[in-house]
Image (cartoon, rainbow, N blue to C red; front, side, top):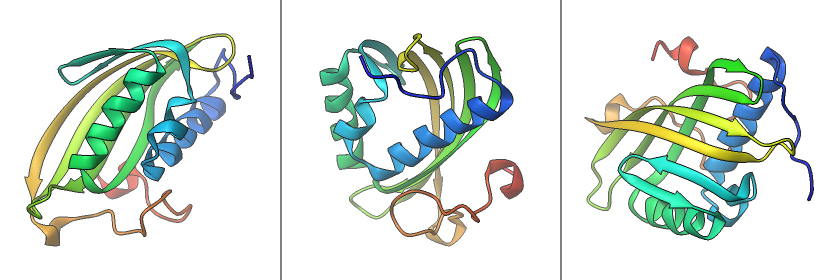
Length: 155
């Protein structure tokens, strides 16, 4: 089994590194790539869906990104201890009809000794926004290093 550093127990620095790595991966919108950060038997609660294992994670993310177009995400560490990290996140996306949404959420993460996430619990709320109210304008892919985070944006 390959390790996925940084490994627990987390510090402020390593928790932030883990959150940014997750953000960068999710911004690729590549379900297979994203799934590799999770243990083979990872258990998720994502909104009202419960999934187990990488194959189900890939299916959930494939479905998600087929509906949530032009997806851009920012994550920020809220708290950490031992092998747990809590993050808050915001993402913007549009649907097939061109309606934009800002989605606010919290995730609780639990990692195994190899640095793979074995549990992810996510609560997410969607708010319709006008296209002119969007805050995330970088080219599709990872957020540029100089783009403000959630705290700097005041959200």
